[in-house]
Figure (cartoon, rainbow, N blue to C red):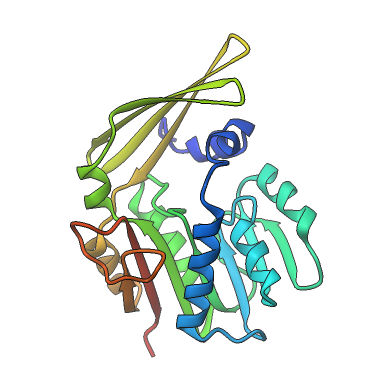
Length: 245
């Protein structure tokens, strides 16, 4: 077991993770979901999986539009929170994305850079294979990842944030193809240290992984408005793919 293997379990299950990122732009996220289902012409009767759903913000919004959605995540605390919104067309379950799914889906979403968490390439391939094996024959997969070259070029090495009286110190670095963020939390005089490590996959890396697993890239976009992808200026790398026939 490597030092960083379970950073995501320690970090995502703490309330500080949700406090730090609570100001995420929900308007932007809802706009992205609307653009995506319109572009894909997703039918209300199709089954959708939100893989690594966190507290379920995308799942909940999709369901509010009339879609049948299942959200899965490794974080028990996130699933506990998301499950408050469950209904007959929205369910949540604890699941490790490296483990095969029990059902098939017409659309599998992996959003907001919820990929590349594992140091071992085989584990990342396992996560991608989970999507492949969980897709119906005509199913579509979507990965919304950071545009790594842009992120690295514009990386802010150090900054601090104060939220609800809690002090966050963030230090970012890039080494051996991994973007690392060290997070020091000061709360009521107590120090807590966490880490985020994400593989800096670029479009060529994904294309290579797709090839290994016999997946076909259908389209790619560079923003939540579904603008064309540009390696130098796009903030996002949104990949739409399916299984080869």
